[in-house]
Amino acid sequence: MRVGVIGTGYVGLVTGACFAEMGNDVTLMDIDEAKIQALLQGEVPIYEPGLEQMIVRNVAEKRLHFTTDLQTAIENSFIIFIAVGTPPDENGCADLSQVFAVAEDIGRAINTYKIIVTKSTVPVGTTHKVREIIASVTDKPFDVASNPEFLKEGNAIDDCIKPDRVVIGIDDVRVGEILKELYGPFVRTGNPIMVMDTCSSEMTKYASNGLLATKISFMNELARLCEKVGADIEMVRSGVGSDPRIGPQFLFAGIGYGGSCFPKDVEALTQTGLEHGVQLRILESVQEANRGQRAHFCQKIMDHYGNETLAGRLFALWGLSFKPRTDDIREAPSLDVIRLLLEKGARVRAFDPVAMGSAGRILGDSVEYAPGNYECLEGADALVIVTEWNEFRHPDFEKIRELLKEPVIFDGRNLYRHDKMVERGFKYYSIGRSAIC
Ligand SMILES: NC(=O)c1ccc[n+]([C@@H]2O[C@H](COP(=O)([O-])OP(=O)(O)OC[C@H]3O[C@@H](n4cnc5c(N)ncnc54)[C@H](O)[C@@H]3O)[C@@H](O)[C@H]2O)c1
Figure 1 (cartoon, rainbow, N blue to C red):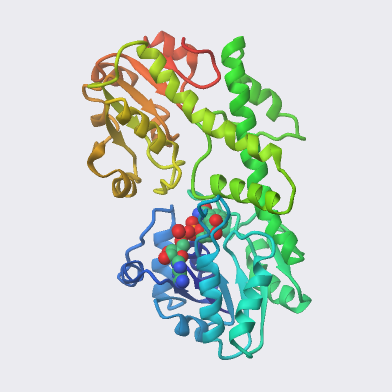
Figure 2: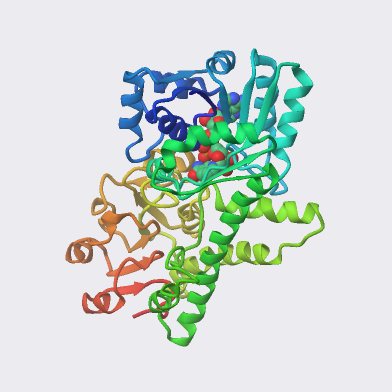
């Protein structure tokens, strides 16, 4: 099939590459000239495991094309996905200006019948609004559909090629059949393609992110209680997670959720509720608990030094990205921790396996960047672990002790066993396992 994707960010680039991998002819379009130029020269602007090889392969096979020209993308495509950003506006609602601008441009560029699909995460009713906008500027035939994306950064290729489920929202059954055909090769092992109305499809995406964020905030609040009563959140997690009604995933206590989706989607869903007179109290609390969790972690650092000032101290920070295996630092907890430490007059030296470039664009030289995780530690007062990269799971603890001024670790991701850290002679602060061992 001939597929167009408008917006080549984390979602557009990955899904476009995966459609091409399945043999489709795909045109990826973006208004960011520098991004498209880089892609045309074989440079992939984001870090996502396996993505670069997939892009190179499909460009070589002439199934994947890049352009900044919308007209070209529309003329080349039968099915057109809108995958532009939907960031929060000043009130926390989804800012749909990119989606609507693209809809209007598509309307003006349509030459023959097309199917236009909203892949961006959009509030209920947006796909219908997209249809109205397109219809207001063209009399050419077209249909719209909703197809929210569930990929996880860091595992995006796998999620996209082998999705747990594909959700398709349609108004016309024929459109559903065409999209089912497109997705057929992705679900050969029997995972479902769920066809529903567009409003339910749009809501499904927000409901998923809302529920996942709720699990995280619930465990984080319990972790704080565990610290007070002497329970261990890791034990509790395995205890509750073995109940099949609950399941083991998304129960890890930590420093709170971040990233480009959960914070904005939970807030946008809350705002949608308010617009319709429905107060989503659980989601309001989920957000409050999440903010509180970051503050709670920072408080552990402050408490360790008691009345002493942090001014002049140097903190080594492992992990900048909001989660492992991505360079995305949007809404990353690291940014809040760094902000606090800098405000208190401390210095921060950070290391991240792939996110130092993207962090540098936001933090500039307010932070030092180390070439490796051990170089990061030299002469630092303490180690602060913010992202659970696998390479941090089994470090050389002897070396850490030698390099740090004092053997103090603040671990926001519970990477190490508590009892072992005592044996190793560290002051080890973690989440939900008592204040200190
Ligand atoms: N990142 C994720 O993990 C993820 C997962 C599922 C769903 N989503 C949703 O997918 C959407 C895209 O997210 P993302 O992370 O890929 O965003 P992103 O910011 O990485 O990419 C958006 C791209 O759209 C481009 N763009 C903006 N206006 C345009 C226009 N008029 N024409 C062409 N291109 C334009 C931007 O230049 C940018 O490259 C959002 O709604 C997001 O909520 C994201």
